Image 1: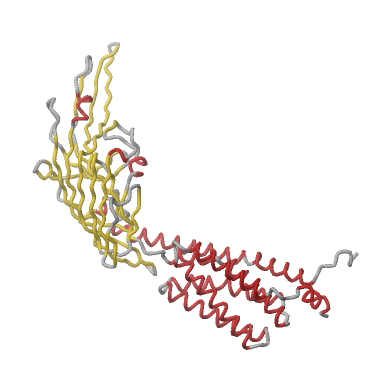
Image 2: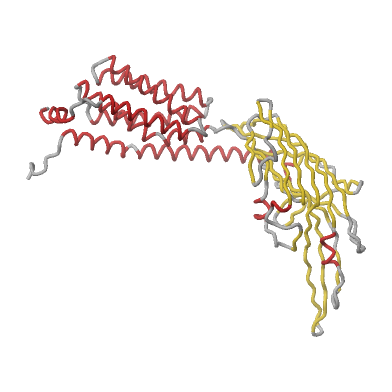
Length: 442
């Protein structure tokens, strides 16, 4: 029975290499978990900085709030109901600059900003007139009207003397409207049938971390923002109106958003428009660190299995062209070493820039493979060539990690090239003879 289905030694070697490749998914998975844990620690560092500076900021201007209490008598009983009517501005212009910097928390750096914003616009109570109009059998009491300016993290407000309303600076107080945090200023009582248009303006200095966005709380919203930050990422529901100016000295961008671009109307009652609906329309800029350390580590480890498989393929070809057998244990040690590369890369990249940490880790691994396979293959030239091929592969991996837009193209072309090189290089190899040589080995 032992010879009923004899396993070809060459096939057995190939299956062993495939099994080793699959087993190496376990340490690679643990390294990926470690990267996720370190990224979570970075998020904790961001939160620590944000507690002192301010979190990501979302500014929305402006909203008029008018509470209306309706009272009536039915069956000898008195009833009343109070509703909060919300009306957005007609026009809003926001102009400002954002001074940026990096703050450290432990080994992590966090982008921070302090924006100086001038907010101006106008708002009308015309849409409120139907709600304020008399109704038969109903007594209406109009509460204190306020003008609300949304600021998602009020703790980041560094300067705000008040809101100038029709030329008079009105003091502000903390407010929360429909789940949106911010500040509000009192308005004069609404009276008369003719629509009233209010002109407002505010100078706001606000600090925060990583992101500054705006809510289009107007029929027509225009935002102009400039900063010396050289790597902006324009985020949110709306892109800049025209191609923004971005260069090594910073950026300048303009946004124009109309009422018809949003998913919610100019006015509503109580919570007819949710906080989620409002914040979904936010737009602005992320003070972005181009592909941060952990993103690059993630992208590198995504190619790990392919890299290990290519290395095993090179060793397999060396084994059968030089005639020097390589033991399965030697394949296993090579695979472990290639897996440790990603652990070393992650550890180094927390303390130095990615280019330097990658160069150091790849150089150390290339040297290790050269020395190791000079002995395994009993040929210094073969060992140096193996290390050189590893260096080429690490260089290719570096390009794939850095290239966000062309990674797929470069990766596909590289795989095609390596496959073509392997096929052409082994096209005259007699695999039957190789298999027989394996079978005849003691």
